[in-house]
Image 1 (cartoon, rainbow, N blue to C red):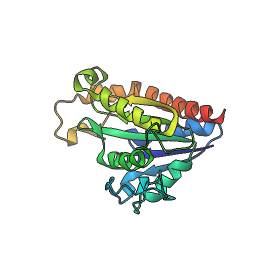
Image 2: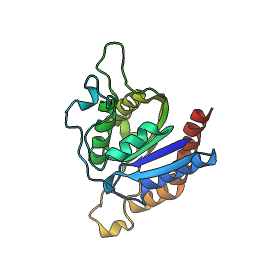
Image 3: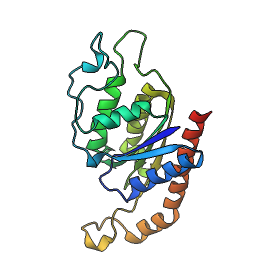
Length: 217
């Protein structure tokens, strides 16, 4: 059992990364081998619409043929048993780094053949962890749910179950007094960090264990 986590956020020790580490701890608790990749460490582009992943009589059907620093990670994803993704929400969507990664992964798997949605031959369970500054009760008016559901549909290209976890109203700075951020109440943010974020961490742990346990059955 191999579980891969992909961090689409720029920070390696903050909200998104912390929750991904907790999810991997959950996977390890059921015996999985795990690995974590940080997209901001890699130099790559999004899909360039070359269609090499769909060329007839090619050994690379279903694989992105663009060669750059993302290539080894994409190949690892295609071999794993469970995939955990994490991204902060920037301006109503995942980060640009995560979006470019998803383009390369999803489009290469997507089949244009009648009656066939995906080229992927196996089943891989997946989970997506989203972190965001906005409070949970703001989500309906901002329309974020459409983004979460769209990514869940795309992850169906991996043929396995997919879940997502939301961590809202996150603590963004070490010290709010150092930043121009007067619309946020640091005391409230600190309280959320102290009371709710540990719950988010437990849910992330359970997510990793649950997805890994499903594929181990």
